[in-house]
Image (cartoon, rainbow, N blue to C red; front, top):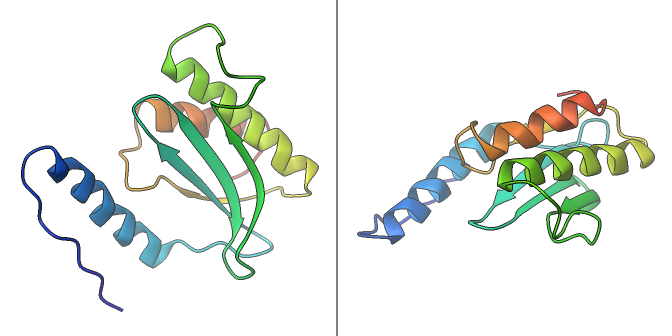
Length: 127
């Protein structure tokens, strides 16, 4: 199945590039009930992580920097991403999930994305 993303100019170019990369990643990465997909959505201010079973189309666990336990905490955005990673791993383990496939959402695996993934691994989630 072919998906097209318009080539944009100016500020929209970065968003279009992220969308193209995410489409490429999603061609290869899919979540199952045994090994769901850990999706990371990154904005300028916040991070959202969801554990999704793509076959059933259900979100099994999620965490966000907007959660009351994380919001307004000390530290920079990378520290918040670490807390989000630990929280989503804790919620996934409570739901009986041991292993996931990682979907970086078209973003580079660096900075806040890597911080979230490392914290989730340290909390016991297997990638």
